Length: 245
Ligand SMILES: Nc1ncnc2c1ncn2[C@@H]1O[C@H](COP(=O)(O)OP(=O)(O)OP(=O)(O)O)[C@@H](O)[C@H]1O
Ligand SMILES: [Mg+2]
Image 1 (spheres, rainbow, N blue to C red):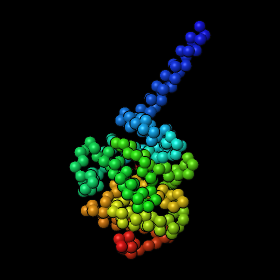
Image 2 (cartoon, helix red, strand yellow; image 1 turned 90 degrees about the horizontal axis):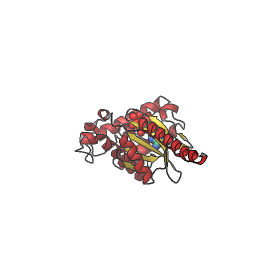
Image 3 (cartoon, rainbow, N blue to C red; image 1 turned 180 degrees about the vertical axis):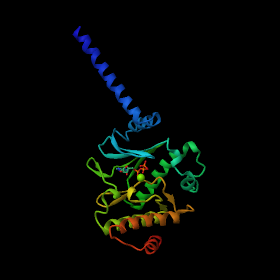
Image 4 (cartoon, protein in one colour; image 1 turned 45 degrees about the horizontal axis):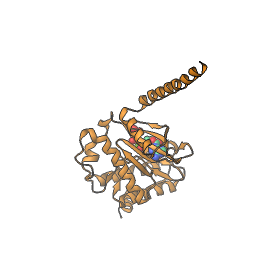
């Protein structure tokens, strides 16, 4: 009798735990995202999704771990905010992403971020290493120390004075030479480790984009204005011509 009870008890408890887990997960992730995460686990790209790093209006970012124990960041673009994604300005004029249907706009931004990260990696820019892309789910290198993600520049200000600005301008120059402009650069899209890392490349455009030069000027102006608040001053025109030459 006792044996029968204990035999039934265990699976029931496990069932309950599993049910609760799915309930919690499905409140956080929609069905398609859950399917994508399961695929990533099955393909052994991920082992666990650990905790949220950031929940925003366009995307949520989670810390996750790969089967070999490496930490990664998983960025999940949200579908419900599709109108936030300015398709015309950033996608249609980019020859890589013209002819995108409305329902695929968010996926296209995710794929675009992945491709831009690949360009950064080969250009030697300090940015997250691209690991994998599936639909709206992007897996990339985790920027942080131990369990803690690095702070964004707006939270801490430049920690290494001129050197932080020099590193950023070098990276912007490397990107430009590789044919890429970030187009959404600000202190909010820079994480500060031993040196700055540039993140959030969904809006990045190739230099053939008709507005690429305008975006480059805006990116650099925003960065110089931010550093000027800390007494680190550079001339905009000189900096732009250094980047372009
Ligand atoms: N590779 C990474 N490693 C660690 N943390 C990251 C990584 N990428 C992003 N983050 C964290 O997630 C936050 C949001 O990332 P990101 O800027 O790419 O998304 P977003 O498109 O701005 O999202 P939203 O606009 O919805 O806030 C960052 O500010 C940073 O704190
Ligand atoms: Mg951002």
